Length: 311
Image 1 (tube, rainbow, N blue to C red):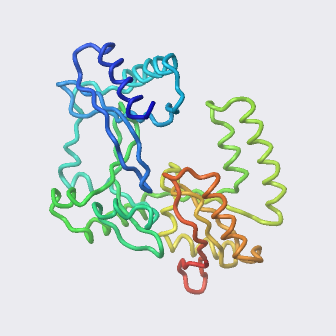
Image 2 (image 1 turned 135 degrees about the vertical axis):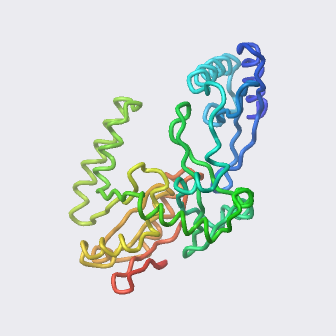
C-alpha cells in the first residue's frame, strides 16, 4: 500500500461516517526543506477554513486493514475535536495594516529550499535564508503560522523591503530570548505528559550526564519563549553581543534545528572541526529533515559584534 492509497482509504471511511456530505480531499504539501507530506482536508459548505490533517506519521507500507480502520477512527475523532464552528474570520490577512503586527521572521536552509524560495520573499543571512511568516491564533487550531508568499505581497500592495522592515521590528520587540543549559531543556522535556515512564527515565539519565559534562564544556540552548522557530535569534546581533559580554568571550553557534541554537564560549573549544562533525552527525541522526537548519558552525565575534561562518 502506498501513502496515497492509505489516504484514499481514510477518505472513504470518513465519507461514510461524517454527516452532511462534506468535501474531503487529499493534499500533497511541500513543507520546509522540500519535505513532502500527505494530508486530507474536510470542509462543509458553510465553512471557509479546514485543518490540514497530515497522515504520514500514521503510515507504513505493511499496514494492516485493521490498523487502517483504527487510524481512520482516530482521524475522525481528531477532526471533530478541532473542526471550526462555521466561518472563521480571516479578514485580518486580507489587509496588510491588520496583518503586519503578526508578521515574524524565521531562518531556513538555503540549498534544501531552492524551489520554495522561488515563490516566497526572502533574503540572505550568511549561508541561510530569512523568510517571513504570519502568526495565526484561532480557537479551533490554537497557534499556527502562514508562510508569506509573493502573491500575498501583491495582494497587500507592498514590496519585500517593507515586509522585512516591519517583520524585523516585530522580531526585536516580541521574540523573547530564552537561554538555558541543555540539562534544563531536557528537564522541561521530561515533564511532557505524553512520555512513557521509560522515556522519562531515559531523559532524566541524560540530564545527569549533561550536568556532569557542563563543567568542562558549557553548552547553552538559545530559543524563544514559544520554542518555535527560535533559531531566528541568530539575527539579533545586539542580544548576542550582550551574551558575549556575559560570557566574557566570543562564542560558537551550533544550529541545533530551526527551533533552537546551541552556544559554546570559544575558550572551551579546542577544535572547530570537532564541532562541525558534531553538527553534521546530529543533523543526520537526530534532527528530522523538516527541522534541519544548517551543517555550518557559526562564530559570534565580540569585537566585530556580528555573526560569521566559522566552518
